[in-house]
Length: 309
Ligand SMILES: Nc1ncnc2c1ncn2[C@@H]1O[C@H](COP(=O)(O)OP(=O)(O)OP(=O)(O)O)[C@@H](O)[C@H]1O
Ligand SMILES: [Mg+2]
Image (cartoon, rainbow, N blue to C red; front, side):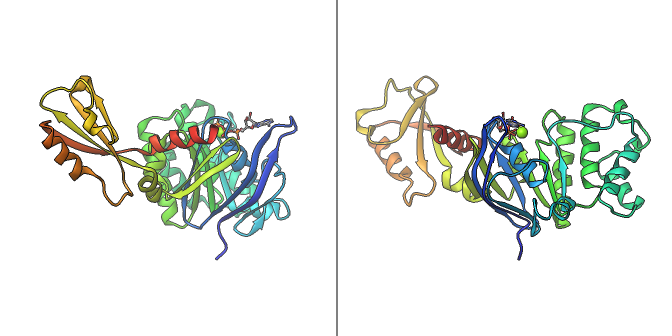
């Protein structure tokens, strides 16, 4: 099956001489929700802009639904909807005129019923006759999404869709994205909110310094790179970790009242049983224990730090 998106050996050097992408390879399947994570300036918007045909690629090939973004520009462009990072809307237009115009741009026949559904999904139906300049920032963002969906794109790009929006809109957006995916739309989103990627994405790509340093199934990523910790609340605080336990990955926290043991999720033996036995032998009693797993955020911060080193 043709992937929704195929990127091979993609580079991009801006006219300033700055190399924003350094050989990116990526395939995204139809119906996937793919999240692109990366620090400021990593190249996320550059990559998305090339995929949408707004920025010229350097070397390499990029196809959307099998259409080359340079050779078959129009065909490729008609497959995609883009919600850009920067808010730019036609201030004097009404919401209705703006979405109708967006659909027309792609040569699609008028379909008021479809546009009504899009506006209703985004809680914009009541605002259809309002001028865009009279809407709040969050509403303007909804209009951008409505415009991006007006021509029924097969692939939707959301460049930081929830930057600066309230919790309600964020949840609406997530629900909308899931509904689109269920109807077969492929969704690529960039975000700085790791919990957003954790919540939404099937797969996650981490980009930094123009390189895609990792692409992984979200659940695999979290088990593979995640570390688990076991925290023991001690009966008596310790001054230091006893020498007898120095071979273990232990840390004292909370003024010596908490002993934290870090272990590898993938390891065959967690070592917890052995740890508890040795604590017993040393007469170190604890009154409580709980385990936690590192979040996607910990994993992400570590990856970016490693890539920079
Ligand atoms: N038109 C341009 N001309 C020159 N350099 C550019 C241009 N657009 C982007 N860049 C540079 O390319 C790099 C990547 O920018 P890009 O906008 O793709 O990053 P990003 O990952 O989207 O960052 P952010 O999280 O801040 O949105 C940055 O160093 C940026 O300054
Ligand atoms: Mg960006």
